[in-house]
Amino acid sequence: MGKIVVLDDLSINQIAAGEVIERPANVVKELVENSVDAGADKITIEVKKGGKTFIKITDNGKGIEKEDMPLSLERHATSKIKSVEDLENTYTMGFRGEALASIASISNFTMISRTENEELGVKIVAEGGDIVFAEEVPANVGTTIIVENIFFNTPVRYKFLKNDGTEFRYIKEWIEKFAMSHLDVSVKLINDTKTVFTSNGRGNIYDMVYLLYGKDVKENIIKVDYEQEDIKITGVIGTSLIARDTRKDQIVFLNKRNIKNSVLTASSDQAFKGGGTGIGKHGFFILNLDMPASFYDINVHPTKMEVRFKDENKVFKVFYNAIKNAMLTKEFLGNTEVEEKKQAYVEKEYNFMTNHFIKPTSIVPSNKIDTGKSIIEREEKRKVDYKYIGILFRTYIVIEVNGEIYLIDQHAAHERLLYEQIRENYKNNLQNNTQMTLLSEVINLTHKEYEFVKENIELFKKAGFDLEDFGDNSIKINGIPDIEYREKTTARNLFMDTLDEMLTNERSQGKDIEERFIATVACKAAVKANMDLTKQEVDKLIDNLLVLKNPYTCPHGRPTTIKFDKEKFSLEDI
Ligand SMILES: Nc1ncnc2c1ncn2[C@@H]1O[C@H](COP(=O)(O)OP(=O)(O)O)[C@@H](O)[C@H]1O
Ligand SMILES: [Mg+2]
Image (tube, rainbow, N blue to C red; front, side):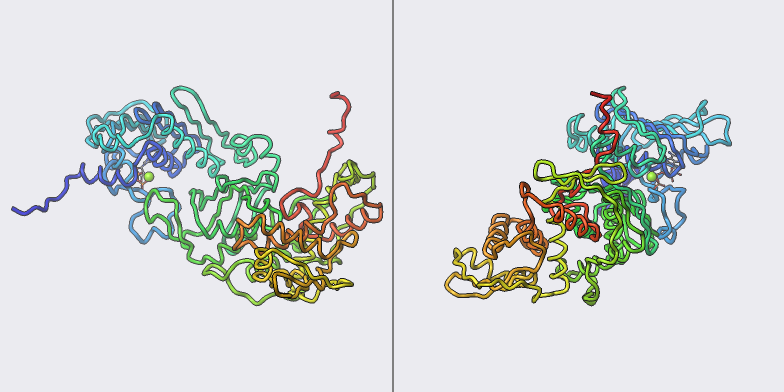
């Protein structure tokens, strides 16, 4: 007798369930997505024991027709596509017609649903996939599904579940992400009779950020609303003040589906560079990309969050532009920038960045280097009338603008300015933009230092150092970058401080070395705290800051200015 048998329906469904349904959180995901596909804007999720014994989803969607109720539990039963050709234009969350069949095959399953055309709803109960009960019942329009005793008939799977608390955490994390991407859906999550999460469904991203991250984060986000080449990007990014040590809070949705994608990660890293985060830190963002389904392939596997964009360069660029633009729309000393100028600047930055800071890889277009204009465009100066008050703690310049007080961190501000100047040298490859020192100086280095300088001599030169290999572990300095030093920094000090810093923080070397090098030179050349500046020097610093497109933070992400509203000075509270 042959050994090949055709599997029965229950086995097929249980095997399919193994792919899609690994744990209670997957059940919640499939059911909530079905609710959204049915047009619901109010969804309640109630679970017990981390979802192991009880999951109940109630929605106010359009409901299921009476005769479709039993059919919806059949494998490959879907109302969402008619054939494979429809897939390119599918925006619904589900389309495989697998979820309900899979879930019903491994649980005790109850479904109650009513459409607005019916007086009564229908309730069906299934055990391990077999319908054991079907009857008309009074019900609200919408659908309620109860999934009990998940994996009761597949004990091996049950054994793989973690403890109740962990399983609940998976559910809660998924629900929170869902709520972020569905601001117009009001979601309520109940755990063992306690409500643990409620979103209001009013469509306000600030409410959502406040709910999930609290006040500090809410006060440090910038709204993103950007559209280019049929890609629309909305959501928020964080300022450098809430940059993170990990990528946990870099959340992306593609047509509201949570995804991970390395092109987007690389793009955002570039956009945040130069002060959007500290060096080695990661920008905060919650962003949704809206684009035609024909722009990407998704769903290699039903539970995976991976996608492949068909035109990676385009997506890289639009995502970069969206973040960079938002970063530069912040108000600075009471003044905001004109839109088109900013756009042109971002465009230029992008070209520079793709030519200099990213090693050629498949995702980066190799345009011609833009050597045309400089980044620092003095004619585009912002106009700000400020009143100089003084300097606090020999560190913060205090000015008044339009009835508001600004503290300018003198070191951070100067550092930003020098960073832009050195970067401009670098960008335009102005190797000769060097200030010759009066006397060239030969410096003896340790072997390690010497090797580093030799290996990276191009970095030094492009930033404006004029160096010669003098042999025998020594280097001759003929000149240093021609930037706006406050006073004669000795060439030796600038060179050694920069070298020191580069060697102590060697770990992030590699792809970020140019960026880090420029920031380091700027930092070492900038005025320090506790240096007394004259009124003229302050005026010049502010003047120079006002011509920068990005005056907001130093290259390490520290803000250059802090604003105090008048109300903060109110004496009434005291
Ligand atoms: N909450 C719901 N509201 C209305 N219809 C639903 C709901 N859940 C499921 N359905 C119906 O059941 C069908 C099967 O659902 P499912 O197995 O998840 O497959 P898919 O979502 O891939 O179509 C859906 O196509 C839909 O017609
Ligand atoms: Mg579905």
